[in-house]
Amino acid sequence: MVLRSDNSLGHGVMNDICDIVYVKTDNYSASNNQAIAWEIEKINQQFLADGKNYILVGPGRWGSSDSWLGIPVKWPHISAARVIVEAGLTNYRVDPSQGTHFFQNLTSFGVGYFTINAFINDGVYNQEFLNAQPAVEETKFLRHVRFEHPVVVKMDGKKKLGVVLLPKDDAR
Image (cartoon, rainbow, N blue to C red; front, top):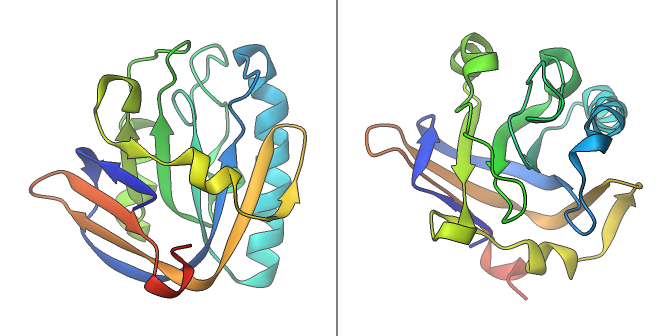
């Protein structure tokens, strides 16, 4: 299991995503959130050009107009993401937006939205595992990892549960 949320939006199963893009949390500072947004926009443009999707993970509120509360992206900057994850940090605790900034887009395009606060045992974010994988691309603030086989995303909207599982062939 790479991700588990006990507070997620979305319903169904996705099994066609091989890529995870996440904000590096070592030395993370909210003062860099605008620069992080620009890096994400560039990576998203490449996914759109390639006709692929990804899972996006980062701290704070995605789409916040206040860059101290989260990464100030607009929908076109993350439109190739099929699952968006707000992952809290021990030193950066922001009340989750739970997708309110993009609610219409999330529901229209069937995008999952997970909230995880592993530091209070509210979900799982196995960043250590992701950090151990070779990066397809690494910028100052982001890492992009790709698995040989698609991950499995399962979401139960009624129970607000969501998971991202590795296929057996990639669980190393």
